[in-house]
Amino acid sequence: MSSRDEVPIGRRMAELRARRGMSQQVFADRIGRSKSWVDKVERGVRTLDRLSVIETVAAALGVTPTILLTGRPRREGVTDTDAAVERIRAALARHDPPGADADSPTARQLDDQAGHAWAAYRNGHHAQVLRALPDLLAATRHTGRAEPAADPPVRVYRLTAQTLVKLGQPHLAWLAADRAMTAATGDPHRTALAAVSLAQALRALHRGRLAQAAALSAVHQLDPAAHDRLADPGLAGTLLLEAALAAASYRDAATAHDLTERAAHLAAAHDDHQQGDGDGIAFGSAAVTLARALVATRLGDHHQAVTIHRYATSGDGWRQLPAEHRAAHLIDIARAHLDLGDPRAAGRALIDADRIAPAEARTRPAAHAALTAIVRTGLTAADVARLAATVGLTRQ
Image (cartoon, rainbow, N blue to C red):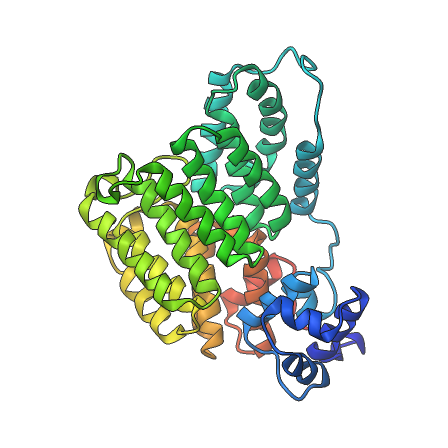
């Protein structure tokens, strides 16, 4: 290894913090830790070895966890995913004058195209989604102006936001989610759909309280009188789960558990809404149980998270969930295994995710961070080593 590879992670954290002009106190405030904790990590007195903490630190520093762990980006430099994100960024930045494109699709055509892209997303075909999004965003600018009451703009901006969250681009995701909210103004159902994406983007930005408020406000707009008589209990339940995860992100265990129970009540009362509507809403008893596991992970109860995960993935409900949902959950649970000191179980979770939806394990920064952490332990099974090599990671 080069001398750069041997730099302790605490020193890399200090260097990156200093480059961004942050004092130890400012940085500590951003990650929810004390100045003393930051100082001890940077001096090597404390070890930065929990993947969940590494991800939080990396996000505050504006780098991927892999850079924080290894001191350098992936060898191949700019990837196809990076280039795709830049094309999406450019599409979001454009504001063409009215009538700039006479060949824009009708609202019906754009809705069909958005539906195909959502189907690709649910099946974990993220490369296909990334190819489609710039053109969909361009069409949305024109179709949205011509037919402001149409659904497609909300669908396209939501898909953009949720895809960008996966790719570790929360600020750009927030922009897309905000546009979805604007396009949905005046329609409670569309606003609720947009709020799902907004809550996800805000959680990725570590703004848990804002995410919770956005989700619960949308639930209230769906039916302020009685949640058990909602016209769309699946959407309301999904929002409640988003709010629960948001509460867990800032360690409000009581609120997180209460919101999860409310979602469980909706799932039990409305069995006909078990597996979603084609716009990324996958709700039902299985989804609630998986969310319970993620809440436990966010609250630091990793043993409970793994126990719930094993129960949830043993039933038929698990297999009926979209491929994207299942693979994303497995990547999240890999973090719990790592924080329990079980890299072998984490590796198995990532291999399972790769079998279900390869793009989840091969393009998401969260999966790369987990893979890097596993490889660094030296306890790497052959299939995990092959996956790490496939995505360009080597033992550092």
